[in-house]
Length: 395
Image (cartoon, rainbow, N blue to C red; front, side, top):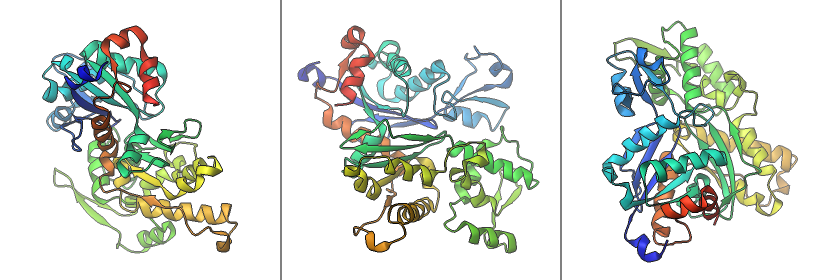
């Protein structure tokens, strides 16, 4: 595409996460529309695979509908971060963009944030939705982790993206992810919520693990936190009520939440609690940095950036920073502070970390808006395919 042709079409941004889809205008840091990443339909309709008819409820409407009738929820993106229902995802994208495009997609180009660990075949299916099915005039794509660092004005660091379905640790060097070192932990916000509901059920509260995940999410966001000193909090929870919080349900039932406040979140640090055999979050971050080249390792230690909704849990930054410093002292310095080079691992928790990927995309899209080196037109896509999009993504 030429610069003049790019200037004639407006630039939009789309960030696809496992919990929501955010769309907006290049240069504007706040999304114009946020659509929860789920569909809802009456239970009898959801039994069948083809149950996407007039009764389908999309995003926020699905959540609201669940308050008045038995709704079966369908999540296009699985708990491991993979798209399992492309048709449902297209419905959500179409709904998200209606407020901006009014179905006239040919007048816009869109920057898509590149999902973590998505295979080339799936990236093609994703871009097909934007170009072939919806009809956007041009597309560009950029790595989510690099966009997070872009908001902080740095090019090298470790992005710890704590999402709804999965947690990703991505080292970035000079503006590009190091794909051989990134790691994923199959524990995210949804896993913590499920484990919280399980703990409360074991305590005697009548919560259905599947139907009441939304209630569990509200309890989690209201009272859960990350324990800095787990042993101390375990003793306080066992011997006192100082950590107990009361949560009132919509039907008036009051639930007392004590040890569960921090116990549920420990699944991030002890994944076996959620039947996952991987290392915990702190250890995984340390191993990612340890595996990087010595020339960039110091910058990675000093620039660990939290991102994603689950990173908002109180105490997350302090716990991770403490754990990393302990591992660094014991494994790198062999317990000898005198060997330190005058710096230590540092975890940053930007205020707007829930929307950092979108903010980075909005800023970057504005920067490249008229630069043909980054964009692939509809015509070019039909000729060259997904590889040209990926080639320009790595520039």
